[in-house]
Length: 331
Ligand code: BTN
Figure 1 (cartoon, protein in one colour):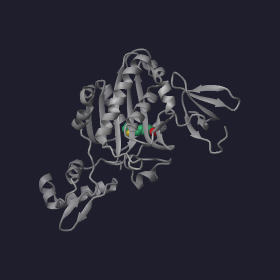
Figure 2 (cartoon, protein in one colour):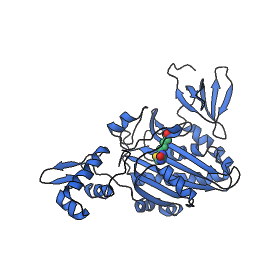
Figure 3 (cartoon, protein in one colour):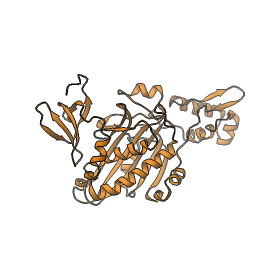
Figure 4 (tube, protein in one colour):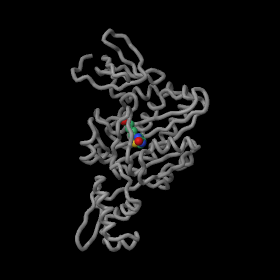
């Protein structure tokens, strides 16, 4: 849904997600709206994929209560590390990355975090859309500032992927692994995607906005909208709440960023390789100019570049592109 939802929608949803019925009249009185407005707003929620029970004589309720994002709860779960972030929970936004890039240009501080219940035009890598479900996704973006220039940010997006995989693996018996440059996969199905956008001087002040979209509980609509195999936490048997998971992601990211700022990607290479889902697999690498190179995936180098061993057994690093498994399985 690309249109802006009614401004009372999320307050209403929070009210309904206690699992109890609320009559249309009680909601109308509480929100200062007419009963027909309540009906129309909740119809909007259904068009966003949420299920609302409407029972004549009893009212409305959400049969599957949602754990809504709450900045104070996330900060509490993070303990002392909470002071490293300024958390803004947004009900609906075009894209947390777009909004945070704008805030960064307006002077927002290092550690500013935007997380959203709903993105109207979520963005993926390579100009793709990113689909998320209200209450069934974790979508957030973080701003980091650097004095060491864009040249020092090589491999940052891989480090973000590693930190998110570590946070998921605190809860999962079935390990989340990595696909270069920064997808998070379980059994070759995508659990989370990362979009890092940078701006600034080559050698002076620069900033990065790292956006993370993670599937918690997908619905059929969303599965159909995505043209690749996907997985969600519910399917993996992971029952952690979204606020706890966000806190875990932020802790892992903070720890990783401290090391990255001092040592760059080289300090993470071994850890990244230990979660590499494609190591030794026959792959095709589609380059940014659409050419395709075939070979065997051989991990990443100290800068985070993808290493491909081609048909002539020559190992070459690549900085851009997208890999896919070759179904012929040739090595
Ligand atoms: C990808 O795998 O293509 C990257 C997906 C990144 C999605 C996240 S959701 C939060 C942030 N806001 C966006 O618009 N995109 C990123």
